Length: 156
Ligand SMILES: [Zn+2]
Image (cartoon, rainbow, N blue to C red):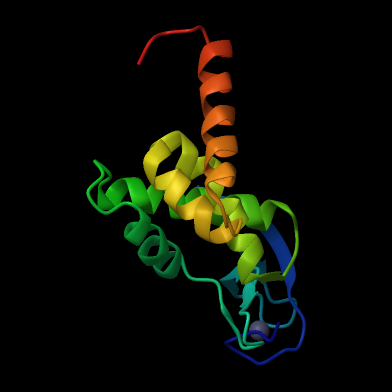
């Protein structure tokens, strides 16, 4: 890290602070040459490998637009989708990888989407888990039902 004032090629970290969303680190640095202080923000890069092999930066917008289709006609707002996209990003980043298959992103969407709206979850899961028969839907619905009953058995 070059000093922005005198271009000295070294600097000393005097303070590090993680941002509220946990996705970046702000470091306060001091140049040992000229003594001036500056700060840097480090964000780990996260790339998505698409099925076509194309690599592109992770985008919460893309998560939202992908999930929005599954939420048509459901009581899901854009801010719900924004929270969901943030949860997906956090869960992917928590694994520490810098590249992830688009398909794994789809799988990371499933748990928070299930909490948000079960119908949208089933629609989305049918694509990402490649449901190809009614039995696959039945199995997924049975799993949801079983979990409802173990959660305290409140009738829906
Ligand atoms: Zn300097």
